[in-house]
Image (cartoon, rainbow, N blue to C red; front, top):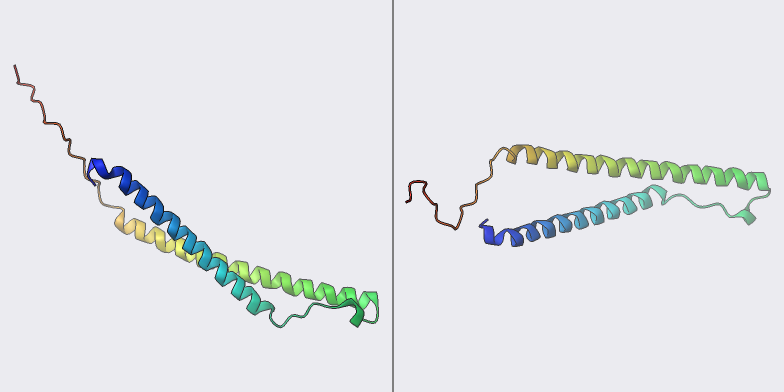
Length: 117
C-alpha cells in the first residue's frame, strides 16, 4: 500500500478481522445450541407431584441433572475441538504465507546525494 493509504488499509484489516470474529462466534454458538438441544431432546425434567416420595424425586432430579451436565460436557468438547481445528488451520495458512518479506515504502522526497556543493 502507498504510504497515503496506510490508514484505510489498516481500517479494512480491522473491519475484516471483526467481521470474521463475529461470524465465527455466531456459527460456534449456533452449533453449540443446536447440538445441546439434540443431546437433551429426550430428557424430561422431573415434576415433584408425579413422584410418590421426596427421595424418589431427589433421585430422579439427580439423574436428570447428571444427564444435563454430561450433555454440556459433550457440547463443550465438540465446540473446543472445532475451534482448535479452525485455529490450527489458520496457523498453517499463516506459516505458508508468512515467509514473504514486506516491501519497503518509497519515499516521496527526492534523494539528496552527498556530493552536492
